[in-house]
Image (tube, rainbow, N blue to C red; front, side, top):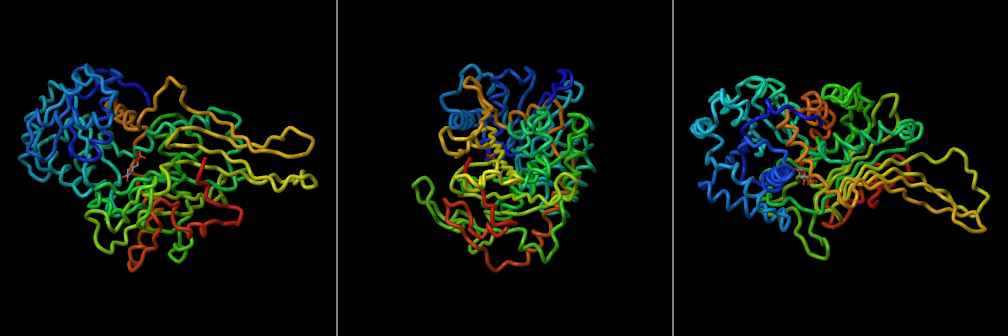
Length: 493
Ligand code: BG6
């Protein structure tokens, strides 16, 4: 969010898991874009660490192919050459001490270099080994300077999250730890802060007096994309809801922070999480539903069901869809349900935050041809396009009293502007040492506490999971979460 000082910038960026999905899909393209925007300091070198027995040349060929696939025709040759020249490849095994010794030997000595960033773009089950091994070869030092970036999910439940955090704190200071949730780097999420706190007209309406309920939807049309070994253990609740959706909820619901700085923001977000009403064991069924995609059709193309995906356990009951209802028991939100849902292989790639307003208190137009007037909505679209819309009623020109619903649309992008990927923002923040958009452990811990009753309940109910056809909006059963008959899922903008 804020700028950094050249003197403190790290001089090496190490990517563990450099040949994996995350590195190929997100990290390499984001770093390339930062190169193109001249935001990487000249002295920064990047080490790609992975298991494959590759030479630097083979790595560069792989990178060329990967980036061409992701960025395509927009690959600029001089930028690409400059970018590729920063890389070296380090073949290694995450579990072997010798690989870390080889890595340490490759890094510049501390007196020649301010610091190093270690990005753990690997499976959560491998975090522990990397943290231990970095410490074993002294790469957790200089304390306070070398940084470690941990991807979500941070732990697989509250207990394992605490253990992971304890392990990290044995070897790293808090200011060295960057717990990433890339949704916080998305423009809409940051824009939400601006929308709420820079516009006098919005904030007075943002509470239980005016808002009937809030919906947060992250629908993906993609499946699990060869990530079965991770996903089949995680499921949608751990993969998306505990972190990404819960973070969106905190940004929608939080009070204005005292300042736009890391701790002030974290304090407000934690207050929201702490105010979420705990779900009683007997109420889990009424608050959360899960389902798994079966075969179906997306964009006219048949797609397999979850159980037919490569490396998924036969008869797996892992959920690929989750919908849940939460209440925030504070002065601002008491009684306003927050409905969250996310799923893979849904009808569309579409994510949005939708706030529905209450009906007007007076039915002034009852004696006119107007039927019941639909309530107002604020729609903050995150994907595929970022926009902010407000739905208002206007009178239709003519002799009768009829209205139509108009959308006031504030698109974020002007025609000559380009969307930033969340990782561009966040990687720059890591490099510049700004932790505002990263998670403090108490946020992670409270978010686990919120979903813990659901996890525990589902862990014992292991016989059966309902399905939804791929290409649909999820199971119809998700409608039973609603508190009143006039609430329905908002699928489209
Ligand atoms: C990741 C999840 O954190 O977020 C994936 O592990 C998901 O399952 C992805 O597809 C969605 O992020 P984005 O930015 O591509 O919408």
